[in-house]
Length: 268
Length: 67
Image (tube, each protein chain N blue to C red):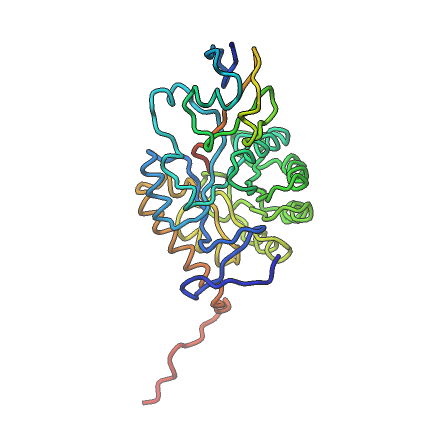
């Protein structure tokens, strides 16, 4: 990784890098599960994100022939970095195939590799994920690997050459937040590549908590799209991400069992 | 010519000879899709040079909402 550290415009933080890509916003937002495309567009805007994830699927030819709009009518590729994911893949072959197709979209070589084990938990299959990542790294992709919160797997993925490891906080869409912060902290200590928390975030405090652990960024989708007011939640997530990041950089006080008074003893 | 496009049998006009022609016939913008022909991913720069043949199985893939 380059040692060049670029300050953000407000001077409060630095940009972060994944591979050759550099970003200011530390919130990455998914485009799934929204009520309408307009809501998707407005939520992304409110979140301040720069990276948005998409899935790859067949063009709906019937809808297209009826003149129906699609996601790409609402996302400006000049404004956002689009991160294709391999969602829906349950084996390495499918994930590799999706990434090779994604490359021909000519939006860059950044891919989120997600190879799931089964439908109920949507937990990543560690072996298929690792093997897919090895092939994709070899083919020149900038791989952001979705993984469990297992420090051993995170290290193996980093050693395989992925550009970022993305441990889950908890299962996709579960809203359970960061279930194993100790593991995330271990991953952070050991990882030679950026660490992002991806999946399971439920509300703004989960994002702040993840950022306070020291992760580079947070990727989320359901927490915004499924909120009662997605636009309001997108705003909340933006500020929570910034707050958590600044708190991390500020260096918190230690946790103590007993009190330390904030005011001097009474002297009259 | 008869093709299988996104899982459906379709007949396209005789003027469709290449993948680029197909996208034009379907009024699909090249910048939004990737084309897979018989499990081979077509290079975007080569779409106009990628000939289609009777019975080809074609996937026209785009970006949709996802997390």
